[in-house]
Image 1 (tube, rainbow, N blue to C red):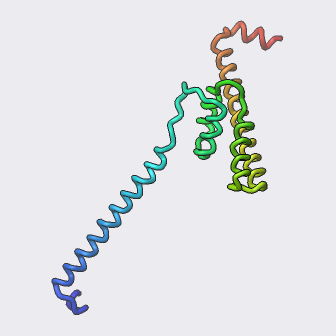
Image 2 (cartoon, helix red, strand yellow; image 1 turned 180 degrees about the horizontal axis):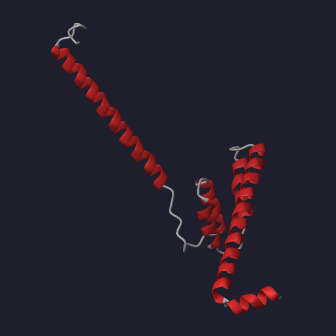
Image 3 (tube, one colour; image 1 turned 60 degrees about the vertical axis):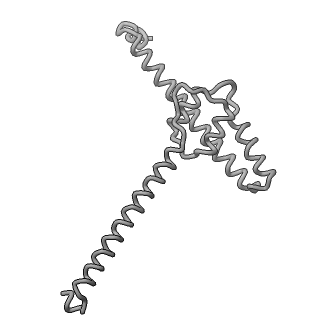
Length: 153
């Protein structure tokens, strides 16, 4: 077949070599790219269930890592130190961006609305988790007789 193309055995070896070299280069490129992607994903800090967070730290984490799961934010919210001043901290940060002309007034309003919706969602998830834990504790601590009394009331 190569003779039909006018290629000699030497040129077919060169073609084979170049093809294999190309395959090796492409596979190494994909491997390196995969490592970069996993490094970027590993840069996000792991949320420890016992770490305490201030409202300021909570907001900064949300700004820096907006793709953090709601479950992680629930853990963070449960370990919130002091008062819940999430909206105040968020507005302070974005107002500073507005003053420095890094965002427009319209962007500020959209960001404020998005953050407030996320805070509301996190708070609802925390409340739901607390209610389910209360129900589970009640079910474990009460006997069948106690449950029947509660039902009759």
